[in-house]
Amino acid sequence: MSPTHDRLSAGREVVFAKEAKGLSWQQLADALDRSLVWTTSALLGQQPLDAEQAQKVGGLLGLDDDAVAALSLPPVRGEAAIDPTEPVTYRLHEALQVYGSALHELIREEFGDGIMSAIDFSLSFEREEDPKGDRVKLVWSGKFLPYKVF
Image (cartoon, rainbow, N blue to C red; front, side, top):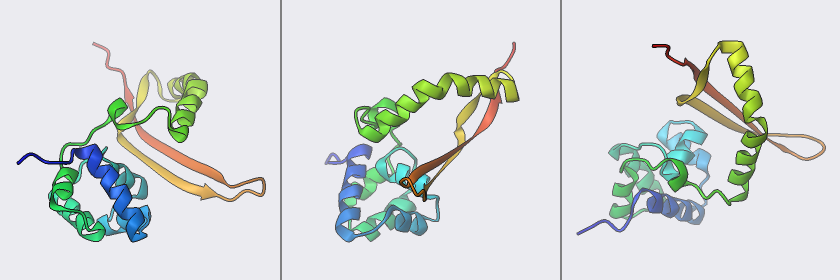
């Protein structure tokens, strides 16, 4: 019998079940004892979950065995995992198009020739109150990796 879910479809099942149960992403993160952003990414299919984590989430959300099994399949990352036309994704991409070169230059000036790792990486998210309208605050933290000279 072949599975009816892949990693990304299991993520969509998580979203539906989370909404139906009235749970928040933070409650799921607390249940897994992981950060909010990492947990959300993992449950959408872009980070690894072990069988125990998948079972815990599946129990909280009432997922069927096939969806639970799919949650511990290898993560799907990159273009296949996102909709580039989704407004938040599009605007983040736009911000990187506008500020990416400046960030590259600032990283190079501060650290030398290299990159910010997206592997040894963390990302935090919070709401920032502002009288002109609340703001979205993202803090990206990646290890600096110098280019190797050989």
